[in-house]
Length: 194
Ligand SMILES: [Fe+2]
Image 1: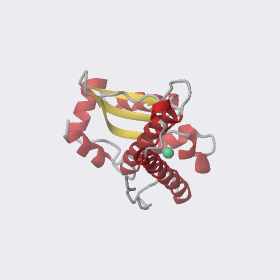
Image 2: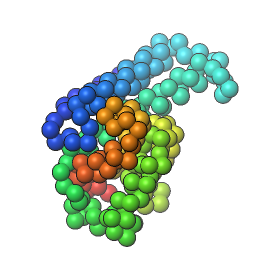
Image 3: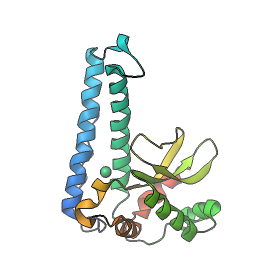
Image 4: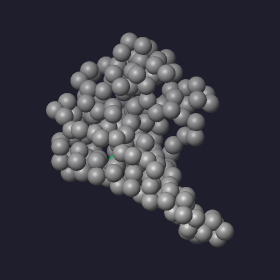
């Protein structure tokens, strides 16, 4: 059983309005509920494990659903947590790390924006632990594009549900305003661990 984290809308969140935020939170809660529902089915032993089949089976659907919903929960929590900042730049330490991999922060910014434009689900700045590299990763859904051994540092939701109520089809404007509203303090804290 997993529990939701309570996220409260505040004036500091400028990239999306409250209506857009509330709609988004309802989706997040839906992923929590579905993950718990799937776990209950596993616990009750009603997963038809003995009928497991890679073309179609209830067990396969449950496994796919568990993966999709838990990633949906994790990515949304990281996204909500890294909203609401007013600093246009990361801390010196974070900027140095970014610059080590991208040359300078503005090149990283260009790459992150392009990654967001090119993605149907998420853009994620992450450390890839196998190579030790910082990279911008493109996800087309919660469960399509994650790298097995990566650690997300900054997360941007670019699913249409994240912006369409407020921005219509102007995804670029949503991305532009997100870049001005990153909570770099939260990102800096995540980066401290690496
Ligand atoms: Fe979302």
